Amino acid sequence: MARLENQEILSKIYNNKNHFPIKDEKGLSDYQKLPDKTGIRIQEVGITRYRIPIMFEHLELPEKPVMNHDCIASMRVNLKEGKTGINMSRLCAILQEETSFHPISHALIEKILKRYQIEMRDEESEDLFEYAHLVLEFSYPMKQKSLKSDNWGWQYYSSKIEAFLKENHFQLFYTVDYEYSSTCPCSLSLAQQYEYEYAQGLTQEGNGIATAHAQRSRARVTVQIAPEEEFFIPYLVELLRKAIPTETQSMVKRIDEQAFAILNGMNPIFVEHVARRLHQVLDNESKILDWKAEIEHFESLHSHNAFAKIYKGIKGGLK
Image (cartoon, helix red, strand yellow):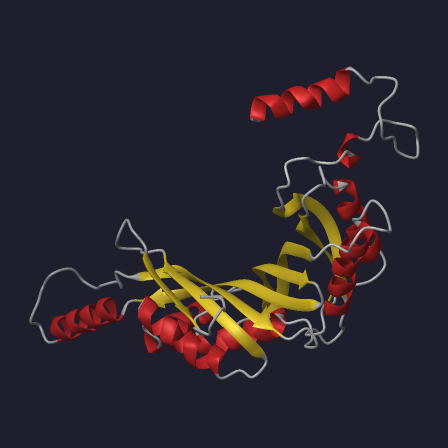
């Protein structure tokens, strides 16, 4: 079957050099517009890894600046039976046109998806595309104040906005990677036990003890929000800071380092603790329609990592 199809393609390409049945506006052969005879639909077709600078409004900052962020875009539509392919460069052109003069917003994302449904057609007589999908991946900076000293730094959050438009139903999802420090409750209790026994003269081993488990960790959180909400990353980060206060620091002096150690000692956590804390915060937020979280502790004692996954659990949702 595949061999016959390839032979047919080659025949159309090589045997019609001067009389190709379909040409573009420049008079060049346009193979993509030839009809497909297999009768097979393709659920998603498009482009990934398209780099583009996109403007973001930083409403969380007092000066509310607009900054360009380097984004990796994925753009896809469905393909009905009878169509050989789509004009993929049109996906890029639409995204570039819409983001060249305006900061990203939910309304702009919906406009881009609607243009995909309309303008990815080859002829106006064709039905609209049923489905359009846009993904933007980027690193989003936010100012972070030092714990004790009068300093601040930029904290960067690996982020993703994913939007779907199926017929007239618009869905919007945000994903943020939140990095924090996790001190193991078992290790903390062992260290405190040693310190007590050493102070009492019950042991002579060593002259101090570190916490065996105190490592950088990550919670990857995805939330679905209503399209009428504002840009959601700063709000989501604040929720995550509320759930897990031991966020890694971008600017640290000695007094901040000591404060961070105290903060970790006040919040010893397993991945299970983090999962439950996220559940409590995310599940009680009315702006969030659905959510899921994947938690990973990059163990400082073990060669393996600790992992947990938790989600809201609604029918047909992110689980």
